[in-house]
Image (tube, rainbow, N blue to C red; front, side):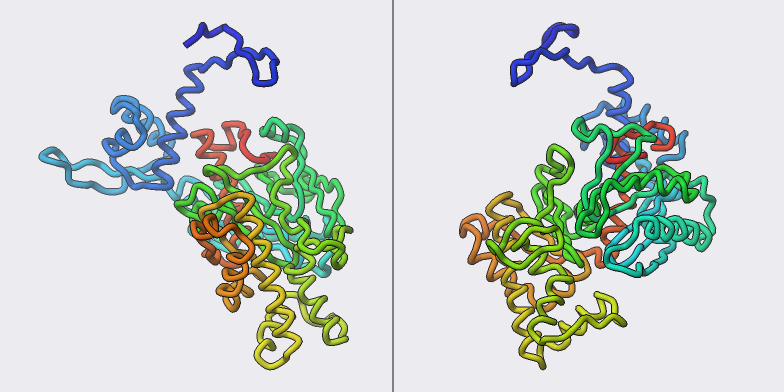
Length: 436
């Protein structure tokens, strides 16, 4: 160990001061470590916590006493010990507070309310009039939905730790390159496929009267966190969670952490090229995977094959369900869906070759609907396009959280801030994710 004040040399040759670990840092680390262990693996005894975390019995006793006084954790019964007194089990208190999750999709807005154990207490869903929704209209629906779920559940708004929001497109925040966002910073959303350019989302929500702490992220990434915490990704350290709805995205998880890239736009799998010079994508490019496997692109290909026009009286999900139902009766429907499964399988093969994941999880409302019928074919084609020895070590599964995955994942954003800080994000000044 060098002297605390000694500088260290950065890999690029830039001299940077060595970071000093303070007592405050250590205390936060210990609180975060114990709180996270109890949240994901509890209930646990103090003895078990010490063994699992490597912290001393005295440290565990002191920190859990603090967390208990703050009502973040509570007792959860007793367990017999070897020859001694029964040990008290501890867990995170589900009644400590509430979190809300919002899914701003291309076809509607969903708002859900949960307790701290992620038990759903209320949900509302509002359709949007256009697949290119006006940002102000979407924000109005979010604010209305939040008021509705709080009223429906009968809770006090003061118990809500925060609101997570999943959005289509890239989320930009002031300090994204450093990976931190100060409380109160504006968050802007870039979603060119739906016509959003530098939409000041948090400012618009504040103007609509939403005063709760806000945590904003790309919807594919919130779905990814939800599936990793509670769904088909649980237990994997390296995974790709795919979202297929009207559009297409992915969350790439490496060693348990979501990969974001230099400006947080990593995961735009839908805008990788699957056909050189292929059909035009709504992003303005050609041959993007999204234009072949996203619901909007699939339906457009089906209409072209039949020489028909879009049914303005039916929403996209209804039309997609009808297409799947027609596959056994209409040759054009069967052909389009088989081709879609092929394009999707090839795209997944690319993911396997690029990221070498343990697991790929197929989610999103259109992805789940397609996967229920065509998962064997998707796996087969993925195997044809991936390196054989890598493919053999990769599981391809359907998501387990259903069409609520984006909202559930969004609701985990304030929970993640709580666990990261080891304290209430309303008072700790969160620097995780995109808090505003």
